[in-house]
Image 1: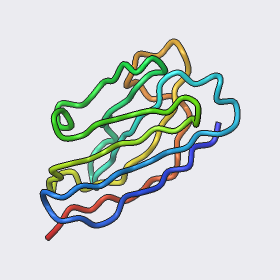
Image 2 (image 1 turned 135 degrees about the vertical axis):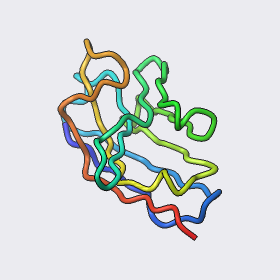
Image 3 (image 1 turned 180 degrees about the vertical axis):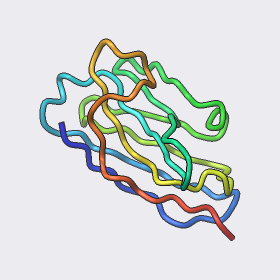
Length: 120
């Protein structure tokens, strides 16, 4: 499985960004897809993940501000991020996981990271 992420960039506090990720290869093996992030000096952490049926799992920091969505036909997952805060600044990674893992537990497939910077 290959994951190609897009989006990210620089945004002011309170602004919005949208991240997208497209999967290719043996996509039939994928159940959940999601986004993780890693800030400097911190561990990589879950932002949000969603399975094929549309069940989503959000980190507490993302609830009410971020929305994850998925298009199974196109094998894509998107993350709409609203009301961004400075503490959302991180490198964001797309992830795909096979069946058998709880939604939000990362699988072995990672996309390239995309930088999100929230700053005035």
